[in-house]
Image (tube, rainbow, N blue to C red):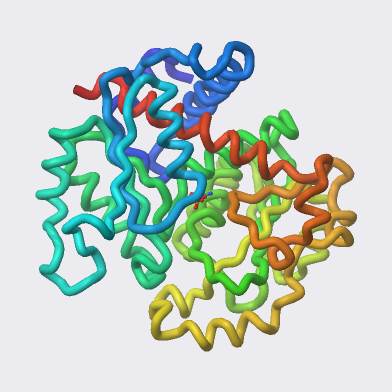
Length: 354
Ligand code: CP
């Protein structure tokens, strides 16, 4: 592994749009720093965290709602001595997704944030882009090409990198050595249709830590084939496996963690939600039983846990008795780790940015 100091320098000024853009060593550095922030905060309080971003501003441009991500980035910037500015895109002149030419050019917006701040986070997914796959990611990539300051993906239609870091950190904390452990990403019924970012993020990231990933989904709910291929390559390079199945019980047998999450069908993300919503819901109805119950948890390893990025749809994605089982649910630890991993990404990318 290259010297830590070299890696930290390398990450200054970098974007984080997908964890695929960072090397294994760079991801290890982000996790190491996350753990250090967590330890400092637990032992001495958040006021003891080094103020490495004093005088710096992180702009957070939200095209879509958030309960956790906004709060974690905002607290994180404060704990690091800087300031986070929340921008609700609907109150700006960006007008994304409306008539062409209605909004400002991306390069004009990037030039402004370059001068006003030291980092720019963007969230753009789901209803904000009518669920059309690739549209949000293309917007973030365009902004990143135009901006000189680091651009951080706060969730788009393809990836959710800072969430993925929190998820793998939680898994490692729970199981220490992740190599050979089994992580099930499970499609689950929900009346609220969700995009692919969180499930795809874990699918591409966990195999890099040697975790055997199983994607359990009903027929017709496949994910981006290009990312599936990338995840397979990662698995091969790191001595892990990636499997797809529609046999839920088989998938869960002996598993160490399960992440039940609704996601849209490929047809919906191709056509757009507005054109396909009713058909999608009819297809969903057939799979209402795809939800984590106590019986399914009993098939898992005896130390097996429920994981979830949140929000979790109680009674749909998992039953309350599973979600609230303190021995077998780590969802709140995972949400906490979202704070430390976001802080690590902020500190690494924005430190040294003028
Ligand atoms: N996990 C996550 O991104 O949560 P929010 O959508 O509430 O930010």
